[in-house]
Length: 216
Ligand SMILES: [Zn+2]
Ligand SMILES: [Zn+2]
Image 1 (cartoon, rainbow, N blue to C red):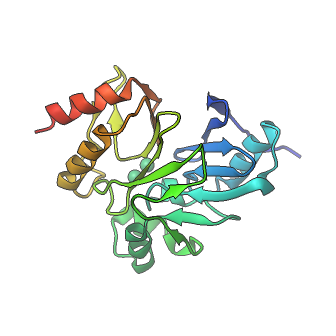
Image 2 (image 1 turned 90 degrees about the vertical axis):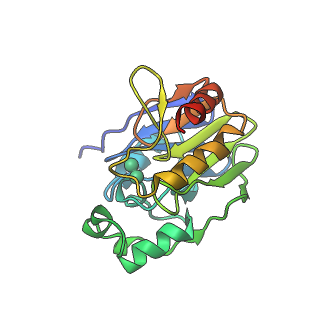
């Protein structure tokens, strides 16, 4: 019997980047395990293998936090409560969102628990939910103030040279909202951005302020 391939790398002692199908997830190993984003449907065996390789039990997964309703972030979640902003959950249920959401049928997503802007989750000393509409109406970023980490999902994009950019215009629904969201993020004390698809970005606070200045 072959076990699913797993690969992970550590961002902070408790925070592990795990490559899943279609996107990167972040497994936060505390007494409880929290997973931010879940890859495409079918990713769960890889996630479980990575957590097992890190010496923990997948049974300790207490929650999935899904940054937005796209299938490469939400599709793989299962077996634990799924937290998500209602603006994306409702769209998924009504199947009136973009083509890819319809195509990959979020109909199979189990019931979700609503995330609210300003909510603080008991993760990494207090994980703040920041509603950042733009890429999708229900996009959220998760801000760990103690560690200066921002889990951005697809709300931001970076290039190979390390410059920060607005979210991809072809896959994002409302760039006016996205700009307002980036302005909010620039007010936080962020050291590192952890993206859904791209390598992490350090010195992120300065990069965010520079993006705000450039994006007028
Ligand atoms: Zn997306
Ligand atoms: Zn994505």
